[in-house]
Amino acid sequence: MDVSPRSTTIGLAGLGNLGLPLAGTLVRAGWDLAVHDTVGERAEPVVALGAKAVPDAAALAERDVLVLAVPDDAAVEQVLDAYLAADRPGRAVVVHSTVLPQTATRLAEVAAARGVELVDAPVSGGAERAESGTLTVMVGGADAAVERVRPLLDTIGDPVLHVGPVGAGAAAKLANQLTMFANLAGVYEAIDFAAAHGVATDALLTALETSLGDSWIARNLGFWDRTAAAYDRSGTPVSARPWSKDLAEVVQAARAADVPVPLAGWLAQTLAARVEAHAAESAR
Image (cartoon, rainbow, N blue to C red; front, side):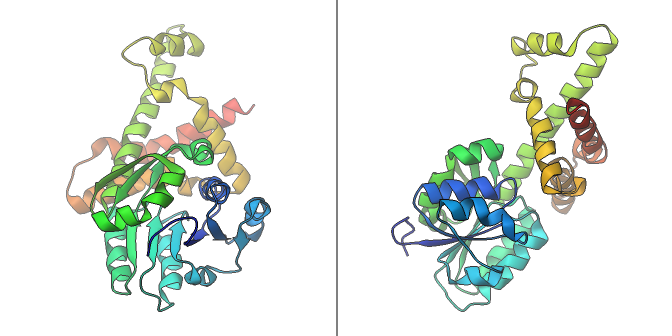
């Protein structure tokens, strides 16, 4: 089956901070899209654009490709089980959710047994880049499976990077999260250190912009405050936010691979409180 807007039906599960802008981008690009979220009213903005809302995940089984943007590994498995309950080989699954590498590989095997190809394709860039179709997409899967769904991935991502077999996309995403959050923790700590010596935060960040300490994180510190505020509005618990969940998954995946990650372990215990406190202070 060729995957194209003209010939392929898409089902998307999960309309949170990532899934909703993803859905909007797909509809605007002409894809035939059905959506589902456990909070039904979240579908209203994309239904207004032309998507179809379905009452449960099982209703997505009639779609040629399932796109998953649900919060965690358990939700991915739950929706995938409903999709695979229909005996329709030849379909495909794209997992945009951030999951453990071992979850991706295990579920790909389950899907393959039903004649369905699964690729893990987590993304980086946030809601703003999801809306513009410029997310970085890290894809794990067999060459043929990745190329088959590339037209769909190209709609939401630039660049789309095939990083290895199934599970490699998930591993690359978690590696990105570790790098990103280590940088964020360093910036927060640098701000505290500088402030204790009389350096204003704005002055420090300006200095960093033309120094070797420059980074996207330092230049976009408000991104995390906006993201935390969006999670507050959607009722997402702190434990499910990436500075909690993703760092915990880095530690879990590293343990399974027997890779020491002492920095990730420390961040998993300390960073969430700092991100939430900074966001609350900025909102005052």
